[in-house]
Image: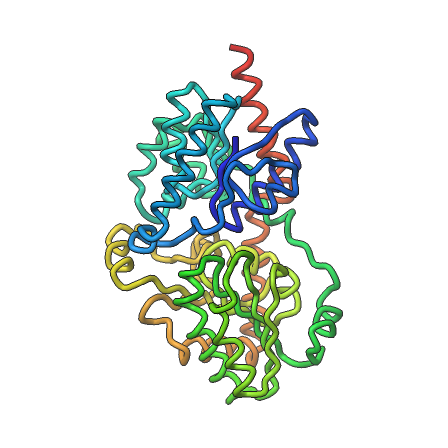
Amino acid sequence: MLSCGEPSGDLYAGALTTELRQLDSAVDVFGLGGGHLAEAGGRLTVNYAGLAATGFTEALSVLPRSLIAYRRLVAAARAERPDVFVAIDFPEVNFRLGAALRKLGIPTVYYICPQVWAWRRGRLRKMKEFVTRALVIFPFEEALYRNWDIPVRFVGHPLLDLVAVSPGREAFRREQGLDPAAPVVALLPGSRANEVRLILPDLVEAARHMLRDIPAVKFLVARAPNLEDELFWPVRMLERETACQVRLVASRTDDVLEASDVVLTASGTATIQTAIHERPMVVVYRLAPLTYRLCRRFVQVDAFGMVNLVAQRKVVPELLQDEFTPEAVARVATRFLTDQEHAASTRANLRAVRDALGGRGASRRAATQVMDVVNSRSDI
């Protein structure tokens, strides 16, 4: 049984399922996921669409649907008695599921663990109660779990295998009707509706500022799956009011990144994806004011962007909450386009981040660990 609750988790779930089925063609996978899990041969007990939200206050809006999903998944576990439960991030639901399935005697492998190194470190105490094995994707996470006596393996980051570029940089620009020689800026406003609603308008306004300094600049906007059209009205307004070439591209983030020169991205997994492409980036984020005030007191790191956390220093700029203004974003992004030495130095730092992520094969290593837990259980 597998459970993930957002697009990136679904991507990893699909890759893991593919590897599990290659290790053993008889493996049956079911649970909470989306299109990638289904395409890999998993059975969707519940589709995750509409469950993802960031922050305390935002999570309240999806709580009823989360409770329904939780109950359906527990009922499915009781009926099908899986050999192992694989939780992929999404602690809001997966912590409760792990505790419930432990009572059923089902071991839990936590793959893509929650960011306890950043905030709410007390969650490790809860994880110790139900996690049979933690599979972590960042090298600095392993020691943290070992200190809590939670069995842990560093498997590397699955995005190293999943980054896929179809037509290539120049071909994709031509496909989108963009001048291959023009500077191109990518906008990645997030994968959740509440993220896009809070972040995209100011990214688009930053694009307006950049146009005043660099009139030739073009824009690509990456659109995550399962998001409503109305969220992207600022993009349509930008193109209509400036006559600038702005392309909204759905479900092809890697192509968007490969075709770009600079990336304006919401903090999260997208920063790692951008680093793999070695694209200079500006990391931004904004929460609802109440959520930010509640969260800030629990944060235990100086940097928020995953790229900076892996590097253990700020290799790319971060503009968060009140610092996230269109003027500030435009200023630091424009420097990447106009200062080639600065851009080259940043690309070199991002290459080092990519090299620290464990090399290719993370999904196969994770699948091997999952099957090891299954086989260990059958030997008892």
